[in-house]
Amino acid sequence: MVLLEQSTTHVDTVVSRMRSFAEEWPERDGLAVFNRVYLTVTEEVRHRLDAGYFRDVRAAMTLDVRFAERYLEAVDAVAEGRRPPACWRPLFQFRRHPGVRPMQFALAGINAHIGHDLALAVVDTCRSLNYDPVELEDEFDRVGELLITLEERIREDLMPGPDLLQIADPLTHLLGAWSLERARDGAWAAARALWALRRLPELAEDFTERLDAATGLASRILLTPLPD
Image (cartoon, rainbow, N blue to C red):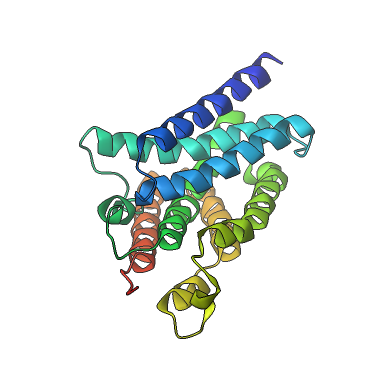
């Protein structure tokens, strides 16, 4: 019970930090756009933790916190003058670019967080709880299902208007090139690979660096400035 209460406190701390970012950063700031999306997701996860949505509450809370910490560490790194992981660098670099649309900022942040951070968070959670990834799969899937249900709401909130759904609009092509469901599946495969490599640190480090770089490249493409 004490562990669960501590984990709940950690989730609340994460939510509090993201709310402080929302108050601090300008609304049009690209990182603020992603932060609003992520805050919505994290608040929903917090609500469902209390509502009994997750079978293994301890595992779900630990995964949620470990996952969020990766994002918060990237923010802290930039604030302290350090380089964030490669997957996050494009968003920090382009966060104030006038030619990048809000939906692009949101997708680039989600891509960085799921494409790179989620796999590492799964491994972190397994180590913390002494789990094998298979023991975490149900809670991973439930979090993923929640993300997918929120994706449509996110797209509706950030799409400027129905005219942008026209096939000729460049944003339409970017939206069609990225899939949250595919990113989630890729994160699970990467987590399992990293777990299998845990006793081969050099290979695990190389795999992580390549995953980080590939995710960063995808984020950079998603942030291609587009004409109005």
